[in-house]
Image (cartoon, rainbow, N blue to C red; front, side, top):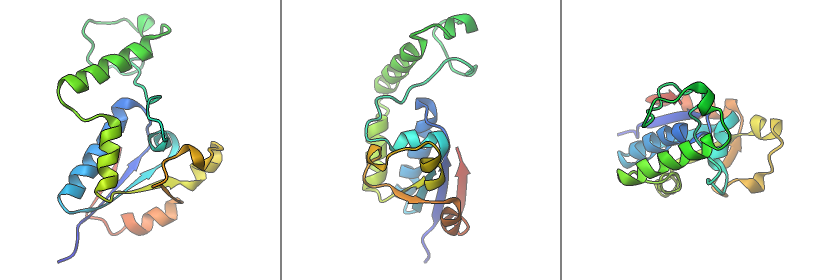
Length: 156
């Protein structure tokens, strides 16, 4: 029996967009899939050693449920991003959802392979010391070698 494979491309580094790749990857790994996540552009933020700077913005996010309707002008005020992030983290904790750090650690424990896009690392002049040590580096072509043989390939 061959092992099923799943590839995920993570392109966004906000709190709300950080959860899907980690939840999907950890679930697939728990089900026995061989999983890789290819982090590119802003998704590289999810590979930083410190995840505390990962935030959410209510601005230009019309589907975000807010406790009260909030005009766009209010959403762009200083401090709204921090407030929205705090509210989301409280909601996640209240409902027993794992933290971003816990989900990332769970993926690593389940042998999910994290691949950072080398072109994006170079483009944004990141220092590799900013990222967790478990990261591998490669280009799109190296990722295609894995993704081309997957049962499931997702772009989030």
